[in-house]
Image (cartoon, rainbow, N blue to C red; front, side, top):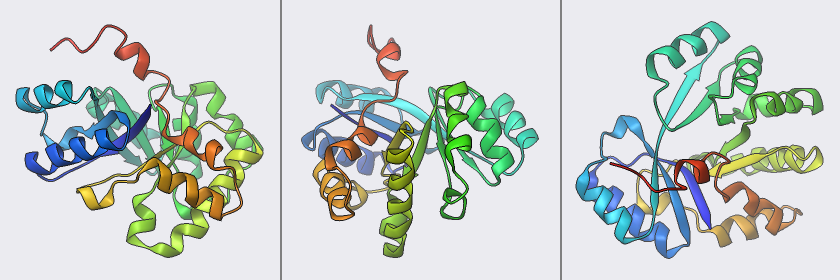
Length: 211
């Protein structure tokens, strides 16, 4: 049972294609970008027919804690909120705030995530996130993912991987994640933990979506 926590297609047709492909790949949950405005009764019916649960997700980018607080007040109504901090101060705030379920750190910030910074996630109960689209956009970011894996496995940090896909060509099969981690010298099965559903998803859908 896999989850792609964040996709952001540009059209309803692309979203339908994404859902069909991800179901064939074994995905059970998909986080859909709120800003896409693509969720409607037709997509709901398609998702139900595919036995896929669609979670409305939103990415909030902030350079400072005050900015993150403001964004939460104004745009924090999504089911799944991913934080993209622009500074270590913003990261610390997001890590401690339980409304941020995933905190995605930039390539330049990963080197600052030590045992102490990682420990902040236990306060908010969130996950450290990595957007696999970074590798599609720039293959050199393979080294960034390696540094990410090194930290999450060394300190047992809860983490999530997601595609940020806008089309079917950007979706990652779980097998790709498995073998990519293996090629870096890590346990492929451990890497697949990053595709497991986030902690709150089973609570949201224990009784199904009521819409």
